[in-house]
Image (cartoon, rainbow, N blue to C red; front, side, top):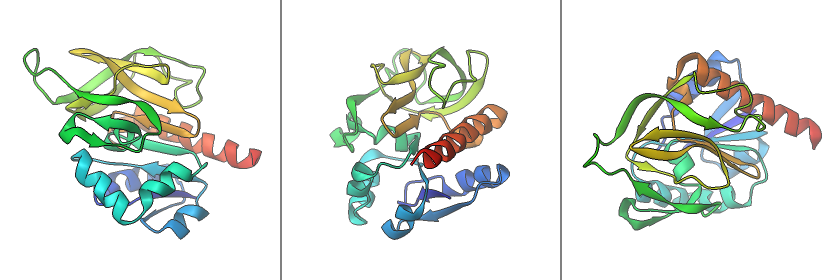
Length: 203
């Protein structure tokens, strides 16, 4: 079973619908007891970083996320909150991945980066993105971006290069919205489900 974290900052219905289309058993919850019973966690998010972090702290989900060894997939803001901090209100993140989110320079192009874009580079050794190249389009909506570092497994370009997919240990994140990205997004979610199933079999 997959648990989608409900922390008042998620695009919950669209993520749930995407999992239903994949026939994936899932729940939407903010209860740690139910999260503990799940095999994998999806950490969605839209909106601003600081209120989202405050909502996590209110339900003690911030510490739960730091402590879990379950596979976690952060989506959009959910991915960004995996990092140490953000220029958005100088807010702190969960600190699970090193780095600070930066804001795109709006003097060059329109911000937010909104619409369809492709990977410019992808590490196909990672199971989350093993069957992708630079031909698939994903749907992005974001004003802040994660700089590229050693944990980046797929990159994208808008104004400058940035991390589109990141992975460190059991934590993975995508800057785009797979639930709104058609067949390519469904394939990425299926990759995550397969990864969760494989990891569960290993333990």
